[in-house]
Length: 190
Image 1 (cartoon, rainbow, N blue to C red):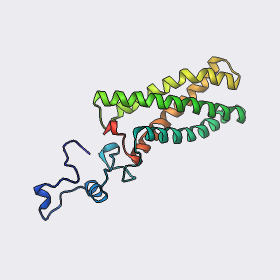
Image 2 (spheres, one colour; image 1 turned 60 degrees about the horizontal axis):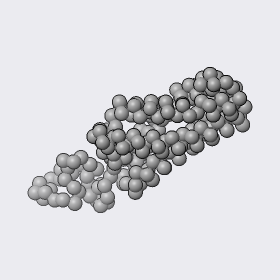
Image 3 (cartoon, rainbow, N blue to C red; image 1 turned 60 degrees about the vertical axis):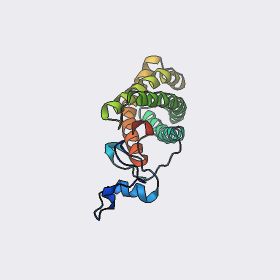
Image 4 (cartoon, one colour; image 1 turned 180 degrees about the horizontal axis):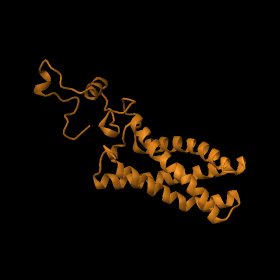
């Protein structure tokens, strides 16, 4: 909800007229008595209500669902690149555990920056910055782990991670947009 819009429970003189000037999202908010989070593009979230009680709960759900899909995708991609399925699955699991921890730390710091900077709505440049910084940090942690698990040198591990990075840059951006579209933007971006 924008800072200029009246709170759904407030009445104004214009609302007493026979014509309603409420948007569908305002009507849904007023009818449910709950604020409907805004999604990218200023539209109401698909879920139509606030689901997460705190930013921490939102971050946990976001990260766990993201990583569940990431394990599957990493295993399939590394297996298709000629690695043994067991080692590929191990890389997927280890990568996801490391990424889950990094995700929680990074998103907490990023949302703190977002609140302090005053950026709202998460425009494309903010989403791209978020994605690139997250993946760069993850690369630093994962190259040694991939080298160990796949029994390859650091350069080969870097190349595997680079291939995964290309996929996960796209996946991260698409997943973040879909999650925000379904559940609404975090409070820091509204």
